[in-house]
Length: 505
Image 1 (spheres, rainbow, N blue to C red):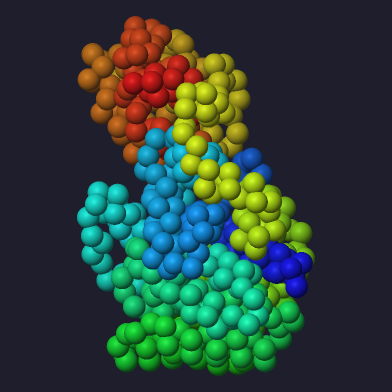
Image 2 (image 1 turned 45 degrees about the vertical axis):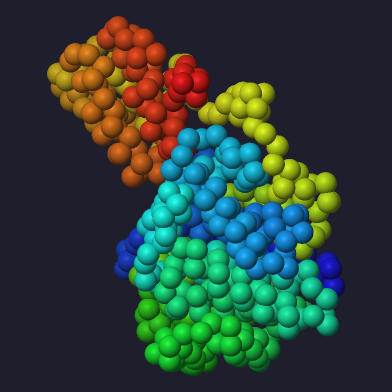
């Protein structure tokens, strides 16, 4: 049974990341525009970035941090204490929040913040950011959000409680998983429909983890049990209860109908809210119960929140088919594939005790040696840039008149599309920041504009040169502080001299 659980856990985690990565490419695209770009079948394969990597969104990031919270509690011996587990998950979410908003230095008690690739803003949900900002400030969370930001991250809860429970204690484990799922959802989302969808999805994954071979009839039975147990666990008003039951039943009815995937999903919604995300996932899995690719393709090709519906459908179908049932095309090029496998193994207790302790509860102080090692692992702007990838941008110091005659400005004009006479902003594969119009205070507004621009273009990587430190006559110590907020952006590379100044202020 252990080998089956490992395979299913790996399938659930990789499946979710695969659906997320497939859907992330088209998250904000209409169905018509998806067809126009990818053909009548829609997107059916990864669209990797310039480095050949299929990037996932905040959905998989937060899923990994959910796992970190669970395993932190487990290593402290607190898995049986729902409140303690929820506190650990909340702490993990606050660590994730730092990767979205803070300086790129790890948090000592968070293993995942030591993974540089997770310091990346991938369209994080406003509800999650707002709620965690309040919690960080010591303020209560106030919202009535039923957005899908909770349901898309709960898969590790279903995996953990299904894999670490004896058969004789299954019912108690389900109740505990339901409580943790409900409480963790309410960390950021306070509408009961979010709670219902999060608990239901957790229990659905729990059931799929504990059932070896699953056909449509078996899956329907798992759904019925999960729905019944969810309603017993979440006390809410009859209107929300009926709404949730109704949309799940509608998903099942549509899965058995002869209508197209597109028409059926249109009837269920767009997946921006929790109950629609859960229903679309149920529909796709039921219709494609033995077909991983068909399930994911159906789950992401619609007008709505493609990455979240893809992620939840991928979690469920992955728990059914296992990692061995995932086609190679969805394993290759997936961002942090090996790390996700390691986390899956950790959730089912397949990793060594020493590994688990060091990852999730060592709480070692982050001293100067570790800090220097982390700085040395950072990717800086090369001293001499002669070529760029298709998504790379060369950021150089200019003058307001746009006379790109010397230094980096000349390189920008000769190699990277800088336009003579344009002194500010994007031009070709370059971005101009004026530095010749006065003191440092006159440069700051242009740097601030650049940082805002780069933060909205996470598909590009911006290579900032030592602007202002050549012909303009400023020092690194004067210019580096202007880029303090750029340390928060994963897609901005700074000169090494700037970074060392900023991190030693």
